[in-house]
Image (cartoon, rainbow, N blue to C red):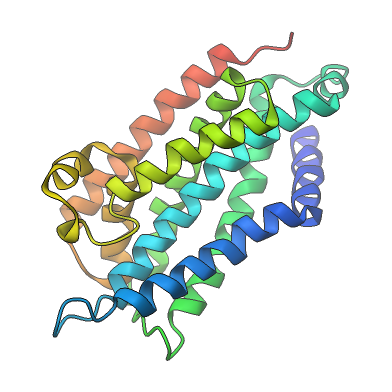
Amino acid sequence: MRTFNSLTRVLLKYDLRDWSTLIFTFLFPAGLLIALVLSMRDVTPGVDLAGPISANVLAFGVSFVGIFAGATHLALWRENGMFNVLRSFPINSGTVIGAQATAGVMLAIAQIIVLTAVAMTPWLGMELVATAPLALIPLIMGYLLFFMLGVLLGIVVPSMAGVSMVAIVVILPLGYIGGAMMPVGMLPAWVQAAAPYTPIYHLREAATMPLIGEGSWSAAGWGMIYLACVTAVLYGIVRSAMRWK
């Protein structure tokens, strides 16, 4: 446990000192949130979309950060020789993955708090319900799902530049089809049909109900079951694929 805690602190300090991590964790999602809410909140007359759009961006934000954290850290460690350093310590791949995931979850929680505060400003106007703190559970689950997917990409794609491009190619279409960019009802019919097969769709379903009270608790429950199952499968694949070499 001491080794795990020490490694988590080291990885968290590294992330806090990395300007690109801070930009993609806080500035990019905040800018996307402001742009989408201000440009689309009045698209449907008589319906205020500030809440749903804000919830969607929260879901996309943790997904975006998760996949990049998993993918780029692994590629960076391979390129800068960190794996050679870690190999000399009595730790296994599960400890390394768990420590990085824990550090990432801390940043994800900070991101959720910042984006929620921005969304609740008078200029954007998202209104929370009493169950809003429960939304942390699916949002963290979503982060872990995409973190594991990112680690898998980092195992398959050997270079930092290559894995970053692949992560973008994966997350942006998933975000669009899953309804994170705009409400699913406003998307083309074929996208609406494909949306329920994407993880971001279920992450949105699981987070929106406790956060702003829209949707249903049954959809939120099924969404969390989906997130838990897919994350467990991805973790099993990652543990099987990641070996000290």
